[in-house]
Amino acid sequence: MKTSFIELARRRQLVDAAIETIAEVGLTKASNAAIAAHARVSPGLINYHFGSRQGLIDQMRATIQQRVDEAMQPVEVDDSYVSALEGMLRRFATYCLDNLPAMLVLTQFTRHDQAGGVSEDAERVKGLTELHSFIIEGQDCGQFRPTDARLVASVLMNAMTDLPREIRERGDVDRAVFERDWPSLFVDGIAMTVRGTDHDAT
Image (cartoon, rainbow, N blue to C red; front, top):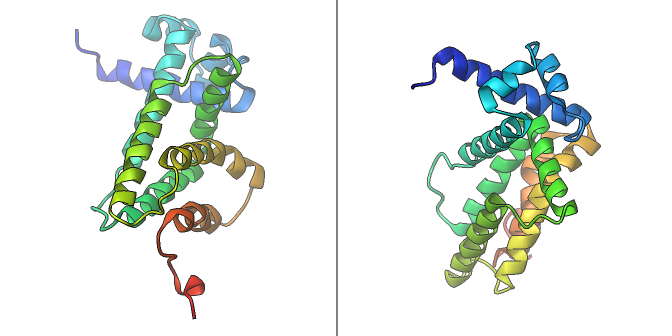
């Protein structure tokens, strides 16, 4: 049976309430009652729409990841691996700035998995694999330095995981710090030629 528009809207309301609740009180304290109170609905609706609290949590995590993936898609085709990397990191920073509660929740999941001894989740493994392949391709084209591609991919992935917390701890900081300076740290570190007149040799 096809899910009705009203049911889809209710499910989204509960997912968004779960994101906001976990961002505020943490994963372990985000009970059905707390999430339902945030959404101003009966706790029973969580079980009705998702089967259980865990069902809602799983859907919330998948929804956040889907939204991130959509936001990371380039508007135009990049003309080089260097510009592609810079654009990807800039889009990620922008999404974190505009959707900080959701990204803090995603970070909580990553750290919760690691603390519990859970192996890397599928999305993280997929991201590492894609970054690794991308860096190797850039190296083969002579645009990235011939450094260890797996190490670079791992450093980038860890930096992206930590960025939401850095944004939260820095507070009211100029967006350019994260949308311009943060990507440049990695792009200038791996690019074969340093970009920008401030770095050009005289």
